[in-house]
Image (cartoon, rainbow over all chains, first blue to last red; front, side):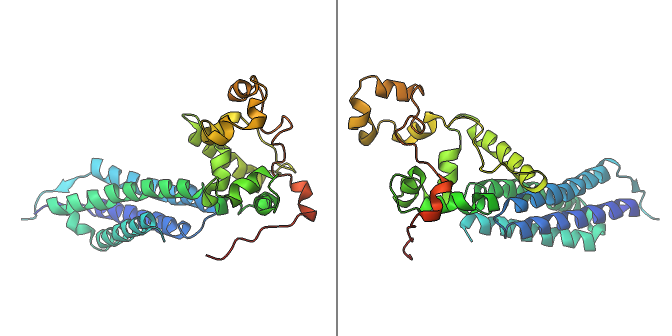
Length: 70
Length: 209
């Protein structure tokens, strides 16, 4: 089994936290039927999710795996 | 909660659970299965939830309640309930000639290929002006109201095609259809929202369902 670098795990954790925050914003804005809800969803929720996805994708392209421990 | 909202909320909650699992145990992404799980949880589900959310918000922005949630629209909302058939929006609203839950949108979208998109872009501009600018009082349309929006429903209807007022002069109907004679400003159907006249008006009360 490969062991991942702690850096990748840290990025996955950061991406996950941002995505959860973005999804929670989306969940909250679904309760409103006002123009501000759409703005919050788009500007805050959308930004959090976009950054989360970018961090995740960055963790994929910069993935390094250490050789298995002897 | 509508069916679509329920599905969207379920997708969001499921995504949160999957992502929380990865946040708590990121080491599982070292395996092939864990990588696939991460791909689904951190990319596929959030994109799906975001796309569904955009669609949901756009659908909500078409509702009458949404339009009337801004203070400047209050009087226009009242004008839908004036107990006077000469008020065109009130007649359309009260006699179910437009869906009541989408009354504003039905008449104020452009029935063109990109009508929805341009209506939404105008809406974003309205929000900007509402919060950061100064809305004009009374509010005005960007362009004179186009007959196309009326004809979207009325064209071909017997009440429209055979109306005495429309057929007395044989030139009237072709001119209306060519947008050369406007429905709303040619002295025929020219009582629209007329919010200045609401002070003395009586209002229709919608019966409880």
